Amino acid sequence: VQLVESGGGLVQPGGSLRLSCVGSGFTFGIYVMSWYRQQPGKERELVADIASSGGTTYYADSVKGRFTISRDNAKNTVFLQMSSLNPEDTAVYYCNARLQFGMTVDYWGRGTQVTVSS
Image (tube, rainbow, N blue to C red; front, side, top):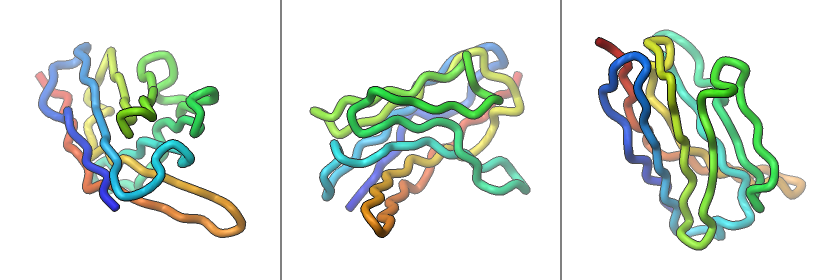
């Protein structure tokens, strides 16, 4: 099983980035996919998630209206489009795949660094 994130980097305040996460080794299309982030000295927090079908999404209040999560099940890929970035968005962003069916199965990527700075 692998989740591989890409698309992170350094961006100026007000800028945009698109993160991608490609999954392999599991049935991607039946998993809820999420993006989490961990800022220095803080716990990992849920940023956004998307249902297996893509029909339902959730966003943390801190990113609502600025970030958009989407998925392409044919390509085993989940995206996070981030806009109007500010320094508080600086974090390592992690991709997560979760399946709950009486027990919970969780897969994590290694993360991609996003730095918002002028």
